[in-house]
Image (cartoon, rainbow, N blue to C red):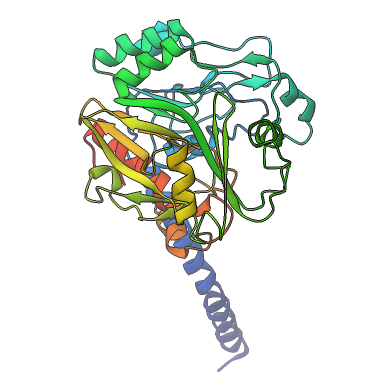
Length: 393
């Protein structure tokens, strides 16, 4: 073999060696790229959707960002006609970047949407603006800047819903500062009645970066003694100022608050997990006779806890998810379901939610991660399956 032939052999050997090194990299790139490619090949889900969020004091948009992530992941068309959602603009309510011009829900908004999702109407308050740098909501009362479901908005929603619009609402939409007339109009459509009791579990009852600072004042006013609680527990508060404190190991067991499916075969729960821990605020509603309670909150109550709730007339069975009829949708989520600050990841990865739910890494943590991946995201998909009639994947 001549010198040229040997050179050719060496060149082929080098190429083969390089290809051998590149092959694993190409395989990994293919595995990573395939889910993204599959997501882009999915058809857009054309269900015109309006989102109302009046509780947007800061630019983290935490009361609706997770909802928009789910909508983009399921490729639901945004108000701009795209498959991408902009958390800063694709909603109706309060905008932190233009504080002097919040929006109310108008008739023209409703005429352009098939599904209305009211994620939160609690509002923005003066003390919130004192914590702009930390993006931390105030934990005490102050003057309202914007918030509550106005009567004219509720009248528009009622008329639109009676004409066949799909309605999904969650806490806090029926509670203060929503006007009682607005509340009654929405209760009639959703098939639930507000008790004005609100609850939340806390990992540490002495931590006033989480526990509202009004809680000790209300407790001292009601019971005539100082707040001296420590350790995990749960607080129930009524709009009139009454408060109940349940301590782990005394009034509560050790199991976390969880969403328990009462109708696990309902289409809303396809591909969801049962008994998913829930860590945030919820309200207590009483369903009408013709309203289905699809899921409730599983409270690990001890005897003393049952006695306390009974003494205050708080129902032990607390609905978490209700539905009135089948279509059009009338769904009430009795919790701050869309309020989530976890890292979601890129929405443009097909089957990403199955991977995250399968890990189960956050199930026993303090975050809402397990709730988001194991219940909320697939439930949003199931809502749009019901509305669109499509097999959304």
